[in-house]
Image (cartoon, rainbow, N blue to C red; front, side):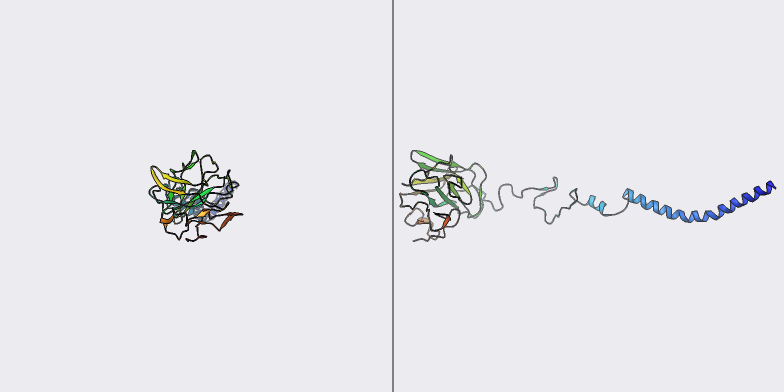
Length: 268
């Protein structure tokens, strides 16, 4: 009896194993497929956006991409930053410093207030060059009594083609009546540099005289500049009978066109 029961138990176990084996074998491929997919997702063994990002040369290493079409012309790939495309000055720069005739003095504020103690004087200089010019190295001289007032442009100072700049007794807008645009003050910012009895201003670049203008004693209106009319022949610039008092106001009660064309006056 016991032997018969043992045989029947063995047969039951064998039948159970035979019944379960097909199900396990059918499930193995699915499990293997899922494991392979999971392994691929962990190892990156597939083609996707991340892989392309690492190999893409326009990737900047962060969350954004460098648009090569709109990047600066001098894009430094080694540092991932832009560098100035023209390190000698702005595009269209002159190849040489200003020479004779490249800068001309065309407006004078000789008497901003009556009497002495005048710190609001200035004169305007216009570039005749078709390129941007660096004023570095430009010097100015003007005899004021027994003294010679000077200025020296020691740093890069660019003036665009046909542009202007002012040389003034003071760089303080409260004192110079809020002069606009590029301005170079006389060294020490003294007053009464432009003599009302007549004087000479000279611009130099190295040993070259770029421009020199001498004016006589003139009948002046305090607070009003005198301008060389743009429609006069350049050869007439030393003839102060053609210079005209400005009629445009850039500041209340002060007349002139500092750092602007002298179109408010005409050649007589």
